[in-house]
Length: 233
Image (cartoon, rainbow, N blue to C red; front, side, top):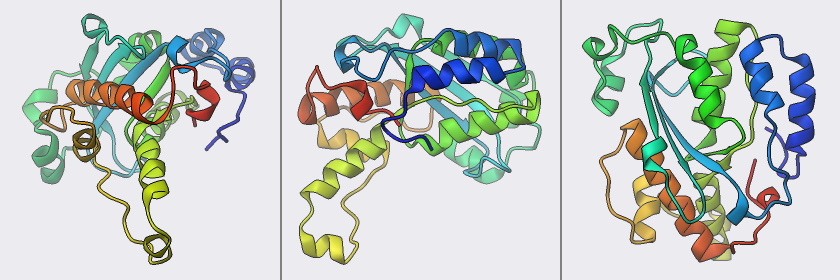
């Protein structure tokens, strides 16, 4: 994981030079806003994946939801949703969670077929996720398997933000006893800000829920002028 003070635009320049795949090269050369950009001026895209399991080394992506947004606006008309066909069979456990069945993905394309559209949709924007180890690690592994090289990008992680907020509110005894600071599921986090309850484990809906959560977190705990470098990972 890159440090919070990582110079991501410079790192993208390095990745563009090294990248062999033309789609990744185009994504990296598109660049990023700098870390001193105020969050109010930062273009973002909420991203959520549904997967066959929790291990990026053995499980795969089955659904991708994207919702572009800024600190004050959510661009629902520009949202995107793809079902993609994993190379392995769906497990009963994953079907129960996200409701995507074999019949839903029978005619779905492989992730590589929608890769260009996906990269175009996130180019120049900072991805916002709830638990970065899903979206960043699963996409990196999926591209490593298909292209022979992974993808690397900064994220703002609403779960990490919420964890840090809750930890700061904990007393010393709770910290020493390593007690949980509170629920960190997307719905639990949204409830603390009075945000509505959405049906979980539907990629476009969870992406929207993540975008709204970040807007609330910034309003409560940061300011419009908070630099991006304090938020991205």
